[in-house]
Amino acid sequence: QVQLVESGGGLVQSGGSLRLSCEASRSIFSIKRMGWYRQAPGKQRELVAEMASGDTTNYADSVKGRFTISRDNAKNTVYLHMNSLKPDDTAVYYCNAVIVNRLLDYEYWGQGTQVTVSS
View 1 (cartoon, one colour):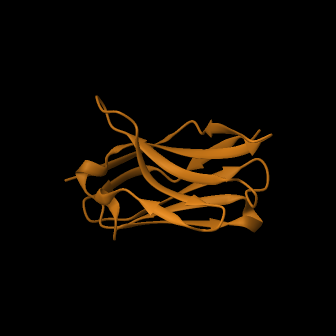
View 2: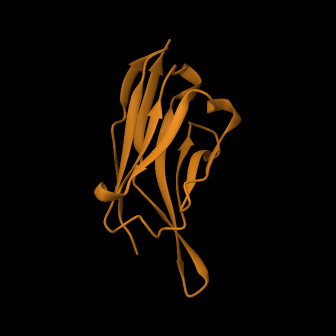
């Protein structure tokens, strides 16, 4: 099991930057995959960025070149660096972790942090 706590959301103007943090309650070194999802009002939750245990990354097309996911194993923390923010990036951002236990994948979510981008 793991508990995930996000922080760093807030209100920012279009073109601005934010850094989201996701602190895990245990070591993230061996976690299969960690990532960030977002959900805007009236829309489905969507993948923003993810990082596998081998540091392979994957990004949604809408954020490529603007967002970067990174990790600090010593701090058990995953970050989402968001630059050139747009009003369409407004959403609740959720941290996600996938842990393998006895060959099965278990998914965990944080409580979410609101990001609002004003035009």
